[in-house]
Length: 250
Length: 250
Image 1 (cartoon, rainbow over the protein chains, first blue to last red):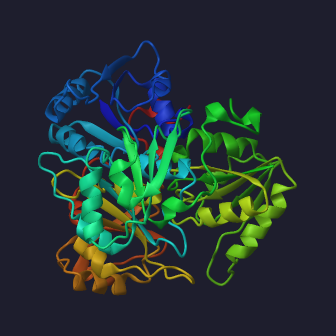
Image 2: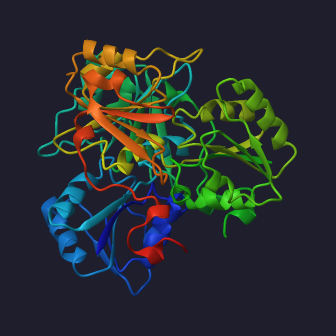
């Protein structure tokens, strides 16, 4: 009856919203991406159906096929959760799925999640905005998709906001070329965060001029801007909680 | 002992993270902003101290004074929650508070929250990015603060990303002037969202050329870009849940 487009957040199950956690526990069927952490899927009761529609290299699932699956399920179940990494309306193609469902008269609601773009930076102590350093933050995809508007890296460089690039590992050389052409300094700090908020998260810090040579494996979040040199308070994955131990488990 | 810089999300208590909800229930003291919903503060046990440091017109509390309060509390209590609307590292000045605390040797952790910038748009059915419409989103403050870097609205306009302006109601005329000077069309869709994800949320839609004349009261989130004309699935505040009623309460 109702399809909930739900954000799973950046990784740590504790960064699910209260509403997302409740929906997962009550769902009849959960349709999820590859980026969703197994510990989050463990919240789904065994009586519910789990459908993996993750887009992986070599086993590509078309968006149209995901839309059809959701439409089919919307007439079969009372509570359908479409679970996406991060936030469903920030590069999650949630808008497209919502439109496809609304077009056939299905009921759809969106449940925002913690965006991986901001949380990946926070996880390693980087505030994406900071007074006197950056008055704006731009989140952009580095992945070139069919039908996507081309990103104007030169203009983005001139705007001077912190840049957070999602899905940009493979394209990081051309991204750096565009940003340098737009006037950004090769000395501008950058950080590449992998598996953010998970117990095995990593960060590599460097400079924009070296971005293409920094080690990185997708999926990763790339932060570009003066804030990337900041090293303030981090997120501590609950699995590694160092203090207030009693807070770690309910 | 530990100060947790915690995001309260956009308003609805159900959009707290699981970790934020747990910390509020176990905190010894909660230091909160004016933007945090009363229903969220109701989660704090009566035995805990609640300290309101909300910055309101006419009763201004300086940031330095908030930092001092947090430093004092960090030596008095085991679990201190500094609760901020939205996400603490997205225009929340969380980075500054973290730096002040780390400078005196206090333990600090950040707990990301659902950003009001993205959730306010989602709440009224606007995905901030959408394939074929916008490949990027920029979140920017419209509020001019001491020590803040000036926002280059002309360059932002040229970058072509969706713009989400926080704290921009009072400055919306000059923002529109800058964006129009940067080449954006006066016909570009805009939306002004107030009290997002709360039962009394409102949205006004219009065009960039009319932005200064659209009714708006702070705090509001202004979305500027072609996506602002989209009307896909909304967030439904739990208080108004129309279906799956059994999901509304645990």
